[in-house]
Structure formats: structure tokens, C-alpha cells
Length: 396
Image (cartoon, rainbow, N blue to C red; front, top):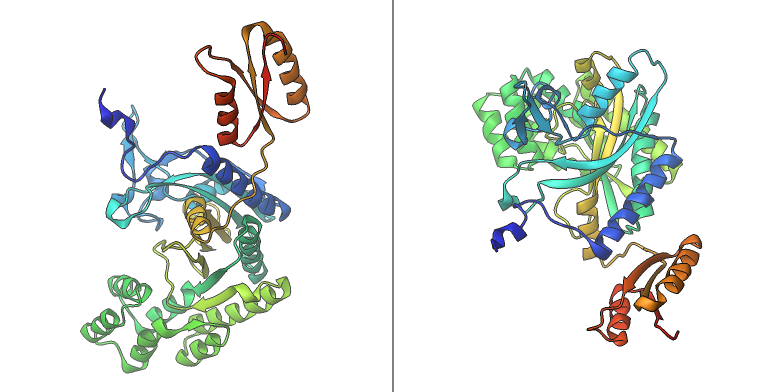
């Protein structure tokens, strides 16, 4: 037999047994929180036309997409990100809707990343989108709901870091930077590479009044006090409005009772260029990347023909499970299971018992006794599986 047939490609894995039961329970807990906020379920295709995730929309780079062709020659893509699909659906089915729309969803995403990064290429994400509401109250609802999801999952120690895309963009506009320079600065600022930022500023001969702000933006992180420092660094209207929006957001999160879970980072810039305002990521111990990420994308729906503001987030379940396992946190999975082992002559009696148990909510596995195995072996099997066992012999 070819042993390679037993292996999965790099970046994907099987999940089964107790681990999968825990994952399903985690989905149930998070989904319950999303539904409690009035979000309605939606399912989109696993693959879309290439243009839905194109560079112009500002999503995943083309080299990280899984691309293939249909029989008509159209380029199709396995979804790397849910947000553009949600925007497409909103434009297609709710073009004339003037009231806010709330979606929630669950499914797998696919990103063709290097195995050297130690990340899965296929992950399960759960998320929510609030479309048609550009208010700071919508931002607060989304962040408070994310915090509720993580608490529902059983996570005890985590932090939601909040950024503002418009603060950085306002600085770039005021300094008159080209698109190329802005992209180069974005990469270095988000990586907290102060030396790279300094090199770019020197090469582009950026005015001194903006140099200090760009150099110090990587230091603008921490508690709510950092908002005052950020405000003092800038004078352009777009950046100042961004800070004011964060002040209002913090006040609302205090009303939600969520302020102890949040911090701020003005140097946190997403690789998704469609974000236009508040951005946020949730971090915890035991995993190197954020377990959840989201933000506001007020211009994305215009690409699909609907002019509407929007904000959303996704929880990466695989990373959340890794973090919880590292912190020795378990998802409470209650499975009422039974194994009924029967000899041939006792099948009718065993089946009747199985039907009675199933009707009462017990998950019953009927197993015919192998003549080469003893009763104690079945009892050991039941113990390994964590279920009770009943034995039906010819005389029992």
C-alpha cells in the first residue's frame, strides 16, 4: 500500500473524536452569543469568482489564493476571507434595504501560505457582519459581542486591541505621501519596525512636522490614556476625528461593562486594505496570532454596487482551540452515550432497549458481539470511549 495515501497535504489536518466534539460545542457556544444579539445565519459558497477577492478590493494577495478554472474558463477562488462574500450578498439580496442587516456565519477559509509559517492553510471561522449602520454604537456592539463570544467559549484571559485605520491614513494624506510610500510605511509600522520607518522617511524627505508622528505611532499602544497622546501628535482633521471616535467607543464599551478587556494600538494596521475606521484583534496566551479580528469597512460594498457602511469580525476557531488547550481550558461536552453489545440470539431484545434509550435522548451504538472477543474487551472499549455499556447474551 502507498503510505502517502494516509497523509494529508501540508497545512491541513484531520480532526475527530473528543477534539472534534469540543470544536462543535465551541461553535454552538459562540453561535448562541451571536444569535442573542439578533444576528441571522447566512451561508455562502466555498468558492467564488476571482474578482470577489481581487487586489482592487483589498483582500488576500493573489499568490495566497487557491485558484482553479471552471469549464467555461472562469477563474474561481476558494474563499480566503468571508467579508467580501458578505458584502456581495448584501448588495445582491438587500440592495434596496435601508435598515441595518445583521449576518452571522460559520465555515472554512483557505489561504495558500508557506508551511514555514507554521499555520494551517484551511481553518474554520465564525463571524458576524452589521451592514447599514455607520455609528460608533455599531462598533461598540461588535466589540462587546466579540468579548461575549470569547467569554462564552470559556476563555478567561484575553485582550481586544483596538486600532484606527483613519488615524494613519490622515497622517499620510497630510504629509502628501504617494500610495507606494504609504504601503511601505504601513508594512513597517504594523511590524513595529522603527528603523524601517525612519529609513523611508529619510528617503522620501518627509517634512519634520510629520516625521515625529510617523516615528512615534509605533509607540502609541496601551490603555485609554494613549488616546490623549495620539491626539497631541497630529493636527489634521481625519486623524483627530479618528481619535475622537475611539474616545466615544471607549465610553460605550464602559457602558457594556467591557472596558477591562480592551486596549489601543495606533500602529496596528491590517493587511486587508478595505478597512476604513476602527479595527480590532483579540489576543490571548498560547497562540502567536490573534484568535479573532475585525473592523469597519465602509467602502467595500460600493464595489458590489451598494453604498452602505459595515463592520464585522471573525473568530478563528482553530487558533482559539490551540490557545485554550495551551491554557488547559476544556470545553464542557456532555455526551450521553451507551454501547449495547448483543449476541445473535438477543438482537431483538437489544434493539428494543436501544430504541427506548434513543427516544430518551441517549446516543446508542449497537454492536454485534464478535465470537473471537470476550465480554470484558467490550467493557474496556466502552471505558475508552467514555460511555456506559450493556451486554445482551443468549440467556440475559
